[in-house]
Image (cartoon, rainbow, N blue to C red; front, side, top):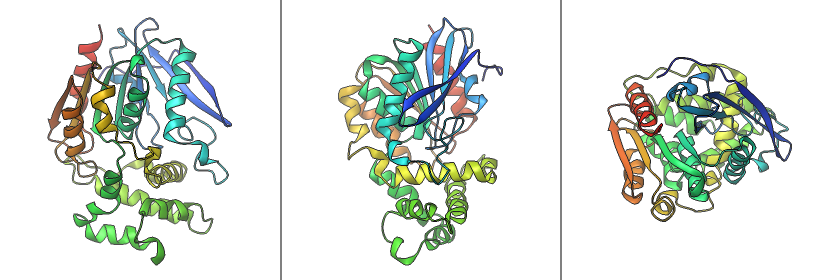
Length: 311
């Protein structure tokens, strides 16, 4: 990773529906544009995201997706309207930010949920994308959501039983994310629901050889924002309307260079998605590392990819 840097430009972009999206630019003002697409949904982007690109070569754009980080209103607040926070809204926000900054084409770098959102944007606007670099690859398909909320319980049966049994009996047999979204809307249950959801998030990434519990989940504000947005998106099939971003890649991303980086110990997001995306995407390359849902080897490969594309 490159040395820490500070943004030289930042602002709040009015994207409509009462939402203001935080954005910042660092690196070379005249450099090659690159957009960081953070994970979650609702994870926000830490200052470390500025360190994956050569600041002498790149104009590094970071934004916080609707409802999280420095964007307003905070999705964790009970009165925040989440009906205007969908994948289509986020893709439109990204395009509005591109236009606002006067960028013709930019490189996308996305992780986890950020890889799903990057794919959705790139397949909608392929002419606006120079390259796509994804790690901890996900695509928001229904089976992926079922896997992470239910099937992976076969590996963690004790923890999954606690995760499931927080919900009332009538909500345990269906979409568990939707059940938690319902609980998070209940003033009497919302705090405990956020704690239980984030405990499960820590559990299903715990087979990573470098696993450490996320300190962010100790912050009740972050925890609530994160839990509300993740359950909102997963409970609604990531608002893809049945679209399969992996299958669509063959037609929409041909000619767009892609680098996919994934951990063979990633239980949260099985390697299957990255593999299938690589098979469907002409011109993509796949790197499999001995890590889980993130790690230093991934970062090394990510930085090597941005270095390779900087010219």
